[in-house]
Length: 361
Ligand code: 5AD
Ligand code: SF4
Ligand code: FES
Image 1: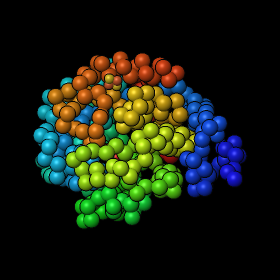
Image 2: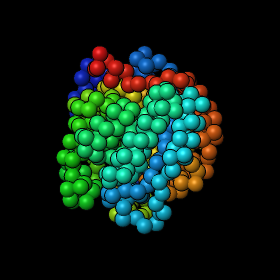
Image 3: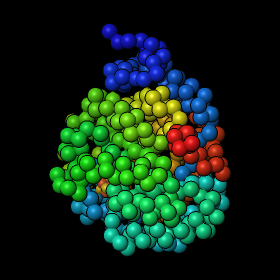
Image 4: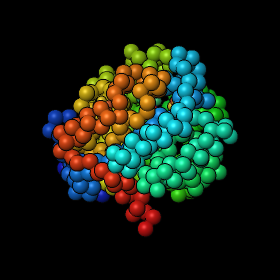
């Protein structure tokens, strides 16, 4: 017999068993979970949702993660790197439209030229916007020295998903070599924290071999790491990847989406003042996926600012939305969606993680 969810909500500290119970809720209890997460969000963070303009800077990647469409081994895509002007143009769009914050994401590259290029772009962005645009980086595992260089050049937030917190499962989803080692990822997260970044991590939900117990451990992992930001979304198979052969063993898309919503809701209850993204992958499954995530605790959304000509080549997974929509169209679309979810957009506000501000006071 499950413990009633109301009892679980009274606890200060959810146990693994509590989390598993919440992940398994249905009917009325499921609705109570979503309502509780909604209440926590509105009492702790209010109605504000923050935009992060997403710049998918380059699809070159030296890695071969088994789930990802832009893995090095996939020769289907033509590889691109945005020019400085294209990046600055996207930043300008974000600036004029008061997004206040951008994310620069790319496949993992660690060569000297790449590191210096990012550093110089960061300085130019800082200069052009008078430091008024906050930059989040999502550029994979780098040395502590590189993280520090980019921090000094003006980046203050970093997203590096753990993907799955179970080391055995991590090994199944990545090539078995040092470059793809689980401990490297943990070390990189520790370096980011040490360097002073607001640190975000996250996982994919509904992967082959993944269990509800693994997902509960993922949430506990976030709490142990004391993260400032989280981005989680359903795993969506991609035909050009090794994991595609397990497609018949996956949970139906609908269930992966449902679990993702519950993960967002439970995390909001566990870590009340962090930033949680309503991820694009959620919209890939359900046309209203991002609004639904906002309604159960997410408070950040990432409109795509990548030039449309590159979007076909940045397909980490299939059926990614907004392939043809220019920044302007996504902006109006998202405004409408956010209002539909009963929230407001924090234009001109950085929307730093309250958790980070509190822990660094
Ligand atoms: N389905 C869902 N998310 C994926 N990512 C990579 N491949 C997939 C996929 N097939 C996510 C990873 C990575 C982020 C940039 O995209 O979690 O960290
Ligand atoms: Fe490269 Fe990231 Fe894709 Fe792995 S998930 S192959 S590191 S872009
Ligand atoms: Fe891009 Fe809706 S968010 S079209």
